[in-house]
Length: 344
Image (cartoon, rainbow, N blue to C red; front, side, top):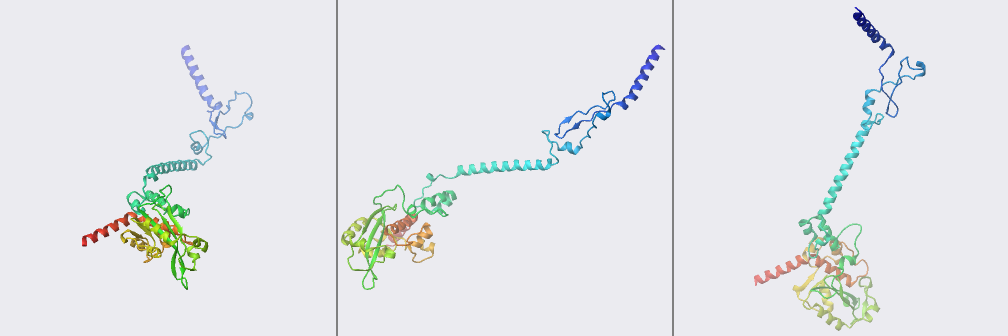
């Protein structure tokens, strides 16, 4: 019995403890402060020192929504977690797009041809674009002085090749300035002769002393003034010097018939390259007798003869037009000559 009584007493005591515990103890609920940190709530056990009034009420548990709004770093999102996440996602996407574009740009730069690789003389930029690509054609146009845009090159940069030979070449371009003689100044005599080589470098430039009384200097167009020709070179001397230069060479110019006429010179037709008579040029500008000014505007994108003419610049312009089409032009001349030989 004593053992049974002990057992019963123990059971009774245990039962009393079990029934007594719920009235004096509560399970602690974690509270979250304004910074999102968990703080330990004070116990409400009556055995604790002080009355219940001294203890602050327990904080209410945060809702599941607030718990979800806490990000992985333990910071609150203040209910804007979705927006922040979306915003961060957009930022990451933008960064990826920027990296992708940068990588594409680098690849594009690596694939572009270098300027040193583009040989532009005697090659039409359109042919380069078809064979190599637009970037190569752009380089060729820039080297040819045909590049369009706000920053146009100066006329000299377009017409004259830098660091090139200043001596005579296989092809030369000539232009003459004339003044008027006769009662109304309608007849013309030579007043200045200028010759440039294939690179636009001037190899000859002389004023010519008039052989007749000048009745119209045509200064607005010719740029010639009395002081220029009154001390000029004798006509016969100029004529001989020019003839020696032209001998055996290709002669380039614009409306060369007029220049040769005032110099009283002839030149083999097969060695004349007249930019006014070149059929492809006439077709491009849609003009049967295009002026040098028109050809330069349309084909070279430069302005010449804007005021008083300069025989050096006009010769340079004609040569630049010729070198632009040199390969095709010379091939056409050769084919024409071969066809004539076949017929004979």
